[in-house]
Image 1 (cartoon, rainbow, N blue to C red):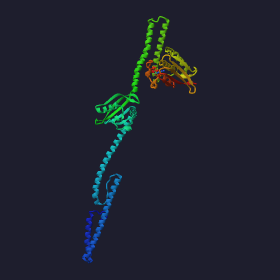
Image 2: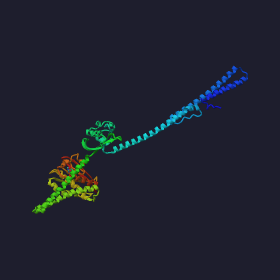
Image 3: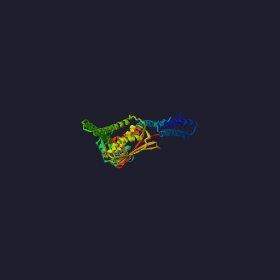
Image 4: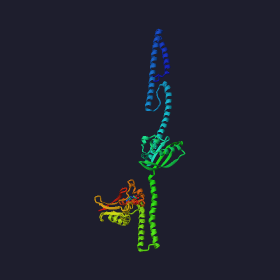
Length: 480
Ligand code: ADP
């Protein structure tokens, strides 16, 4: 028996055959009942038509159901994004369509899988590229030197904060603008452009160039390199600007220091040698002259000793090998000792010394020798940088409320220009305006700073006005 489900297009032929058979057999049966031929024909025809209509209806409903199933499966594939196979049970005629459709879907699925694989690969590559970009940017942003990166059209594509500050622009507002629109320093723009146009044969160039920053000229060592792609094409330029102003200054100071130190060492040595030779040659005939020569030799030896001590002590304190032997010390006593030693130097310049000292019984916990050196340096500086007939005032007070002893060394000398004040405690620093006034090494104040602040936890400061004078003050905790 043919079930409704199994009825397909091909079955229509079978149905028609069945209908013809039924027609013949019905005709024969009805003829047995002696009905007229015409009536028999009509009844049989009607039966065949009804049967055919029923068959066609069943066939049509099945076809519709199968097609709906195909549509439903295609829709759910669209929604899920998953390509599968279309399955319709029992209807062989529909398989005429579903078979090629499934072949097409299978081919589509394999192409889609290939595309998905490629897409995944691309996503991974893009993630790696963006991680590398962030990494590179993080490196560039963490560099303290100014870094500028341009592309092949001399447009800005990257700059770190140091470059923004130095050249006065914001990267965010100037991306992809040409350098000459952003940077006012024509030489720098030209250097970057030349580097790019010289192309791949060009490896790296280091140029020294001075750039105005906040009205001050600063010297930069600029390293220019081409960025070359794997195809050997120049895709841009990286410029790194390293500020060498301070290094150059230090190099100059060191050169000055060597010449100053050798001068400072040679001068006392030369006079010691000369006076000793005169004594040996018997050129000092009387006792007074001999005595004068001996005194000169002794004072020059002291000077030499002081200089060498300063140099050695700075390096001892800096390297941490200096032994600080603290004990209760009268600051007033130390200051008096220094004034005794410095008196001849002051007298030679007719400098008047005023003492305003606290009573001797106030004591600080200090290394007396070191504090002596600190005070001696401050007093000798005051004498050195004060013209003849000036005044130096040494004040020593005790601030009982704060528990500190304060020592002020004031003079009516050259003073220190405001621009130099922050640097006077730097090693080898000498104020240019005062150079002619006295020879020196630029080490005295560095040593004083180390003695007061590093070795004694005290505080050293300076106030000064060019042409009027200076006051150096230090304070140390007082013992109660
Ligand atoms: P120097 O051996 O050159 O005197 P210092 O370290 O003692 O070295 O001082 C550093 C600089 O500070 C000096 O070169 C000088 O120009 C300036 N200076 C120090 N003390 C005074 C002062 N009392 N008055 C004016 N300038 C001073």
